[in-house]
Structure formats: C-alpha cells, structure tokens
Length: 274
Length: 333
Image (cartoon, rainbow over all chains, first blue to last red; front, side):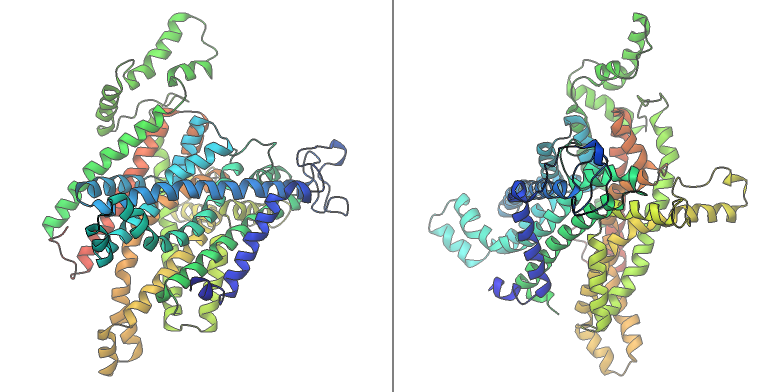
C-alpha cells in the first residue's frame, strides 16, 4: 500500500535511486576508485580536472574522485549507524513512557524537555572534544544526543494506540507487557518513525560533514566529504573543484534522503496530500 | 489563567536542575583531571613549585577539589545561581564577563534571523495554501526544499569567495561584527556598518529555516480554511480578503507563535559554525574556541546559559499560546 503510493511520487523515486546508487558506490568503493584515496603525489598537486584525474587532485596530489568515492562510505555509515542508535533509544524510551504513563511518563517527559533545551550541535562538539573525534565516537555521540524527537513521536503514538480494543484483547489473553509493546503496539507506531529516520539520516550526514569541516571529524588522512571541503578553504581561488564537488555531493545526498522522507510521509499520511 | 502561568513557571525549576546535571555530567566525561590537563598544556612558563601550586589551587576551588561528586555539583550550583562561573582557563578573565561581551552579538544575530525567517516564509506559506497546486505553489515548495538541503557551511564558504573576496566581487565584509573605528560614526552609520557585516551570516542562518516554516504555515492555513466558521464567513458574503486576513490568519498564527521557542536551540547550534566562518565575536565563536582550548568553566557556563535561554523562550511561547488562544483550558495544565 505504502509502496503503491510512494512510487507515484516521481521525485521520491529519484531520491530513492540516488540513495541506492550511493550505497553501491560506498560498497564497491575499492573497485570503482581509479586511484588509492590516500596515495599522495607531490608532483601533481592541485591539478584541475582532466582525463587523468576526472575530478582533479587536492593539495597533496591525491585524486579527488577516489577520495569522494571512499568519502561516501564515511557519510553513509555515520548516517545509518547514528540514526539506528537513536531510533533504538527513542523507541525504547518513548514506548515505556507512552505505555506505562503515570510517574514514569512524567519523569521521561521532563528528561526529554531537558535534552531539547540544549543546542544539539554544541553538545556534540563539546562531547567530541572530550572523548576525542573518531568515526565511532561521532556515530555514538550523534546517536546519544538526537533521540528526543523519536521518543516524543513514539510516546504520542503509544498514548493514542494503547486504549484500542486489540490491545485490551491481547492483555486479557495473557500477553506480557513486553509482548504487547513490541508485537502489538510498535508495528502500528512504526510508520512515522520510518519517515523521521529518513530525514534523520540526512541531518546526521550534514552533522558529520560539518564536524569534519570544523576539524572535529575523522582524521584528515581519512577521506571524507567534509574533510575535502575543509582542506579546500585555503585553495579556493585556485582549486574550485575541491569546494564545489564535495559540496554538491553533500547537497545531493541530503536532498535524496529528504525526498525519500517526503515521499514516505505523503504515502503514509494521506492528510498531507493536498 | 494566572494559576496556569504560575504553575508553568514553577515547572522550569526541575527542568533547569536537569540542565545543570547534564552540563555537569558532560564535563565529568572529560578525560582526566581538568586541572592536570591544564598543567600539561599551556602553562609551560611555570618553573617554581609554589607558583604551579597556586595555578592548581585556583581551578580546584572551582571544582571543589577532591570532594565527592555531589558536593562538587552543589558547590558549582551555588556559584551558578549567583552567576559566578569562575575564571576562564584560557585568559583568566571572569567567564561572566566574556559571556556578557558576546551574548548581545549572538542574540542580535539570532533574533534578526528569526524575524527574517518569519517575514519571508509565513507569507509564502499562506500564499501557497490559498493557491494550492498553482505553479507558484509548486515553485515555492521546490525552491524551499532545495534551500533546506544546502549545507550552510558550504554556502558560507562560497559566498565568502565570490561576494567578499579579492578575486571576485568585493561587496560585503567577511570578518567580524562591525568595522574597527566604526564607534566614531554616528549611530545610523554604526548601525549601517553592523547591518552590512551581518548580511552574509544572516543569509546563511535564515535560508535553511524557510522550508520548515513555510510548509508549516501552509499546512496550518489549509487546516484553518476548511473550518466551518470560514464557510460561514464566506456564506454571509464577506469579501475574500477579509475572510483570509481577518478570520483565517489569526488562527493560523497561533501554532506559528509557539514554534518560535523551538527555533532558538537549532539557531544557537547553527550559529557556532557561521560565527566561526565569519569570525563574528559572538557566543557561538566563543563556545567553539573554548571547546578547542578545553576551557571547562566557559564551556559549562555557555551550555547552562544556552539551555536556560531556550527554556525561557519555550516558556514565553507557551504563555503566549494561552494568552492568544482562549480555547485552551487551564485546568489540565
């Protein structure tokens, strides 16, 4: 049903195609990249795009195309792992608050309100400065700081669903709380979570590239889109390709995920289709 | 209503305590003793043991020394409520003084940004709602969508090169909040100079917010325009502009107002990058620099103040909500 609606939306399908293409690029990076992403060649620094280097070379003579291809791995894996972490936390916290209600709900809602008050990006930067920037820490820190939206969403859905007849039926037939939460309620609350996850991957990729841009991301020798952009700042007047190419890649990736999110939302929630 | 407002104001106390606990916990995650870390970095000039000791002593006072964590927290809280954040590890100036210098700049930047976002996206969203499926509606939706996906730090970098660089157009200053010596100018000259400095940063901060708010106002307006009272207004023969601007617009504005409070934390986070790129001496840049320097007292103060500001703006929009919408009941709180 959802797929049927989704595939009517041409923009969303295009977004999905880009997402799948990026995955292919990330998985087969070592086959696709014409050069090693870390091999430097000081005889050919800052060369503009040519037949030899399709997207030019950077300030250390590394092939920008190869670095872009390997950079896709960083962006996509950070996006996916970080979002998986916070979806897991958000579902658990939101489900407990919505299902049990009462003082548990009050405490959890207060905690969510506290988390909402912090500017997330500042919090992520501060924690990363303490634990040291690495790709795993970035995933974990984004995951630990961004779960509040999902938690609120799931809590709301659970509050709406838990008084329905099928839940009462499950309870009188002796199902445990855990079974009711995960087998009966959660599948019905998952649709908006999926939409939110799609937008979430886009914003996690944006956060990762901003962090790399500020020097809080992966180490400079590891190829990442934000890192290439950051290195380009000193050579902008001579090497436009180092600025334009990663920027366009980040933009296209974020757009693709947002389009998929839009398409999903329209397909799931008919009220949004005006 | 007064009872509700009072109750709502009391509720910020537990939230604020939660904020301080998280701030304190984040600092505890820092590797090793901040005092030891400070000794390793920076203070290389200290030779005599006595001097090193006084350097250790000072921050230890802030942290409550070797006392157990809850006591350290209580001591920090005691200083916090009197706005005493201690001295910066970096330049030994009182943290509160550094924040007092930078906060007005960041607030100017962010309030200006919020105003511009509202001024541009609400009319666009309402226009889209009144002409659904029109060419302009589709154009606005797509345009906003593209803007939303453009990374602000990339746009900022490109704007600097093409509109503020020596090689291309040199239209805007790209460094700072105001030119040196601008304080000699009359007030309108000074204001103009600040405005000229803020054009590019404000562009970078605003455009991402358009998509969200214009879509939200479009959806709200569509919801309102379907209500019975709008049909009644039309049926009794009111001109369309009166139906829209007098009857529908007022109810559309209510949810839009409450959004204002939630915009602030996102903007404060975003202005860390933008202030850094444009070298604006605001709180965003201060926070980035204190993170780089592991200046714990300043980081803690900024986290607490940012969170507190957000808390206040959420509180204000909640109160505004009940003031402008008499349908909301106060009993449930």
